[in-house]
Amino acid sequence: MNKPKIGLALSGGGVRGLAHIGVLQLLEESKISIAYLAGTSMGGIIAGLYAAGISAPELRERGLHTNILELLRPAPHHYGLLGHQKIREFLIKLLGSADITFSDLQIPVTVMATDVETGELIALNNGPLIPALLATSSFPFVFGPVRHCDRWLVDGGILNNYPIDIVRQMGAERVIGVDTPPSIQLAVPGEADFPRLSLKALIDRKINLVDWKTPFLIAESSAISMMSLINQQRAELSPPDFQLSISLPGIGTFMPGKNKEIIDAGYAVARNHRAQLRAQLEQPVLAASLRRGLNFVRRLRRAWNAYHEPLYSPFPPIRELPAPPQVTPPS
Image (cartoon, rainbow, N blue to C red; front, side):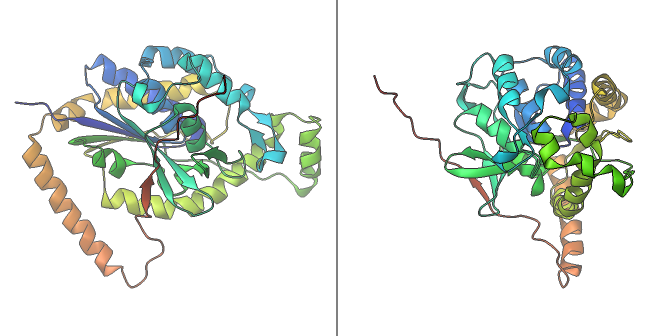
């Protein structure tokens, strides 16, 4: 009996996305091979690095010794508080080349981005890898948009933070979804604490980025309220065959110093569900397809009942970008 092709969908979540490394480590130890990968934001970065041949133990080692604050540098003139240069340098060092493309990867990967001019959801799966990874993780207003393939692109989590449907479209017969939902407690300081966090103070480097923890959490909370409705509808219409939800209470998108705790949490959740995961993956393809079909009918009925009061289209248009043109440098 042929084994089903397994797809892995990795959600966004900023630093919480390091939990994906722990899940990948458990999958490697369990000899569960991944045929397709799709990810958004940090999930997209982890998917791209893993598909490039960087093993889960290597990713863990890097994750344990990387301080996220060292990768964040102010660049307010680029339509966001922070620039991409340090992250770009970090990715080049990890990948060993600035010129790696999607066609060089060992596993097919799609990462999600949003076109800020058209509002379209963009599936990135060809051309240069590093600009795509920067685009999928460009959290709006915190990072500036990335110019890629004649578009201005930002984080795909705005429209699809958990690309289960995308990895299934790629050809996966079984989909494992790994979600790192937000769980933050926002304590806003008194009004008197905010003047020192002025944009000018940040530009002049008179304050440390740690002082911007509360503004980052405010930005995250605002974005989450906008994104959650769209992403909830997408997940309900295209759920994974098996879901791992990593709960990380109190850990926000940009919170430093929790890397080991986050990676270990991902590994622990995957280990605790290993038996159920194996049973699900070994289920015959036809039985799994019938089960998904019945679940889809139920969800469609609920959607039809609520159709008179839609909030958002659950499936914004998805477009794949053409491969960027090959430019020959002048001799």
